[in-house]
Length: 226
Length: 226
DNA sequence: TTTGTTTAAAAGTATTACTATCAAGAATAG
DNA sequence: CTATTCTTGATAGTAATACTTTTAAACAAA
Image 1 (spheres, rainbow over the protein chains, first blue to last red):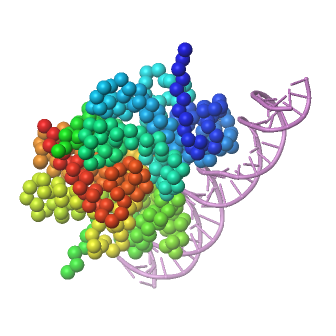
Image 2 (image 1 turned 45 degrees about the horizontal axis):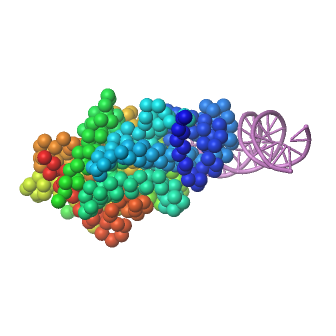
Image 3 (image 1 turned 180 degrees about the vertical axis):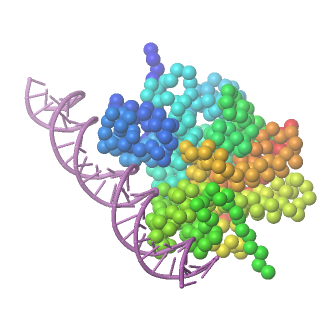
């Protein structure tokens, strides 16, 4: 019996859920590939349609523009990471073990055998590292936030901050620390590759291990505050 | 005698230095205002020209596109903050005092009497908070980095990491901590305003004081690591 | 006075970001 | 099994964007 994971992004994130149709799933799969290759700026629905052997107008039936598609993908990503965190945290008995496991999931948000056939989690992880911050750095943030488009990110952040408070109930900055962990988990691999002067971890082999170590160092020392 | 501060961005950051001409200075002044009002996506050279009562083609003589203009402004910003940090650090006798002063400059990068008449530092600070990360989240990062377009940011980061090592010579992540301070200094005011669930500081009156306090808390605890 | 530089104005091109229409095929309901 | 609805691909069209080019006037420098 194969257990299928299905992430359910809020309906406002698309005109209709692309996961429901063959074309929709191919849009997701191919847009991740193209976003990785071209970057958000050079990515267009026209190029995506060409790659799909489909028509521009067909894509517009799923997403009203490329920003909405990006929001969908980013939101999918955070729901996915949330799922991984939940699974990793499940067995652990102490709060410290749970936080440690959560950090491990954050720094390695993909699995050997992809569970969702039309999403390459490894590639999506790259895309979110490269383009993710553009999802909320826009003039429409407040509107989009009111529509609940950032709930995935916020609810994971909130869950991590609960873990933090379990370890140290009087820690004054649980949300900031949680967010900080996410930001570091994405920024430092990017810096290591492109702007190495800005970090101390090194591009190459086991970057996710040194990243995990660094995040744990942060948590461990900040939670020792008296 | 009036002492004039003049920031000198690398020549590669513009086709010709806008600070040299009246039109150039008006381009800087007005583009900051428009970027703040419209955001990078809706900002165009056409609108800027209209606002200036000038022609689109005239602006293209200074900057080859809006991304280059953004890079120029961001670079100018970091050189400016570097200047403030240098000044703040100057009198202090201990490394801890110097770091504390640097953090203060980071969280309040403007002065009562603007020293550069054609740049509103307060507004530029806002623009860099909102749009700054787009300067390096692009497919051309590596090229642009090789051309030295991010030297302003990197050299300030390097200076702060030296301060960190003066306090604790065996601290394993001086660059990451320095970068982290910059990122937090920009992200958390943004979060406080738009995505308050992601932070613990509050939008309003003395946000820069609570921000300074939080950054110091970070530094102080991380540097206590044994 | 001549020369060079800088600008505003206008016009033109290629691409982007959509919107609308239509016909064929697939799925679905009665 | 037929009528209807839904979905897609194809085509065309529009407005805005991101430039580039040319020209002529203003001005500054030699």
